[in-house]
Amino acid sequence: VKLTTRYAGSFGKAAGMPIAPGNLFVGTFNVQQALKAPLAATRFGTPFVEEPDSIVGYYKYIPGPQMTDGSYNAIGGTDDFNIYAILYENTDENGTAVMLDGTNSLTSPYLVLLGQMSAEDRKNTSEWTRFSFPFKAMNDKKVNKERMSKYGYNFGIVFSSSLKGDDFTGAVGSELYLDEIDIVCKKNDK
Image 1: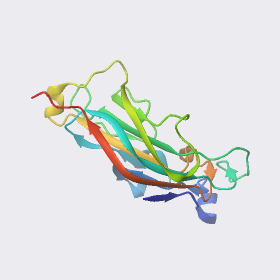
Image 2: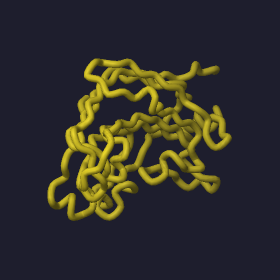
Image 3: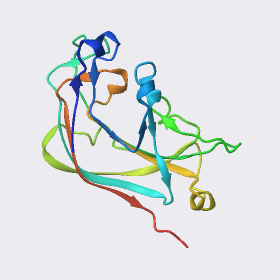
């Protein structure tokens, strides 16, 4: 897969969304909400019945030539990419459905596990480079096997060609290539 950050044109710039990072994720996108609440329009996850242990795969990353801010003004620095995955409780204490989105995927109290490629491991490279990172417990939570067996968790994975693309900051032309992505799950003790 090749993900590329693009200029969103005069309409995107006028709407305060001058760039569109290349994104690939597990979940849904609400087109009707995209202009008024773009981060909330991106809803992450699908029901999952295994406990993820790590994510492995290969990437290449070539940043675009010029970083711009959310107003499409040139700024210093070099673009970066993002790869992360989440496991979260998909209902609250009252049984109401929970779906994390771009506003809360990394901060929600329903987040149980987070796996994220560290800044030290993200490199600009035109060569295929293997990556691997583990999941870590969040919010002092543990995976509950009974809840898991009843599809009580959602799993989401997110890839983006611009790390700060959710703020519409990045470099047009940044390219993230991905291949052979594996979700490694813990052995099930049935």
